[in-house]
Length: 351
Image (cartoon, rainbow, N blue to C red):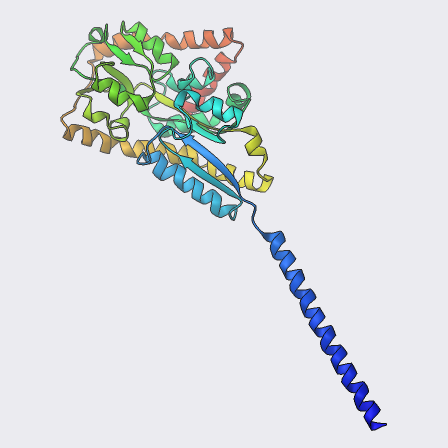
């Protein structure tokens, strides 16, 4: 009897051990499946831009943005940056974004002339006094630009550079001395400005401007002061006439299908980070101006201004071009008058 009881106890203990082992195996399998379910599926996005890896916008804006996106999405969205036109040339960037050849493009709208008409408002002569003012104004234009200029893409950010002056390879003191010079134009409005000045308009990407000035293809250019350092134009420029005219439009767009692959939660994370761009980029460009001027002076570049009388002549030539811009927009079926009033009111608000 005792032996039978002992035998039963032994069998019971063995059964309990087996059940315990099975339970342990089952528990291990369950943990494994949870880990598998929790594995991060990374969406990799390729971002192409025209600047060098040393450019302040690359180093201080785009790289930190990519790192923050990766961090805040916990590895679900990775942005790989390709500087110096690594995946697409400036004139091809927007087509590459639209078609999905690249996911994100950061470029000048002016590289595809006539396509992004409303985006030229940042070129309005004498509308802005700082990059921050221009970028905060551009922020207020997001909806109208998404609706009209970038409806085939996702508009991530639109803004501009610091304020543009005239870079030359010789010294001048009058507006008339610009006549006949070959001047690189930053965009459509400045094609008209250059014509009004009696100069010859040359269209080419800023990344090609150093060689163009060095080889005499251009006698000068309308350009933001920071380009003296960021594109080394202080090496091929002798004189700067400070006229404080405009901000060069910049845009960052994304392929719609690529955007839609991202979860709503991660889209919100990206948009929260992008919402900081107008202030960050505006302040960055403004902060670079003084250093760029000093570095250029150290290389012997001469800075001057037109006299009040010459500036009055300059205004007489270029101010009417805003009315032409409005008329051209309206003729193209775009809200030219409405956009101009929005821009003017926003620029006054952020002055």
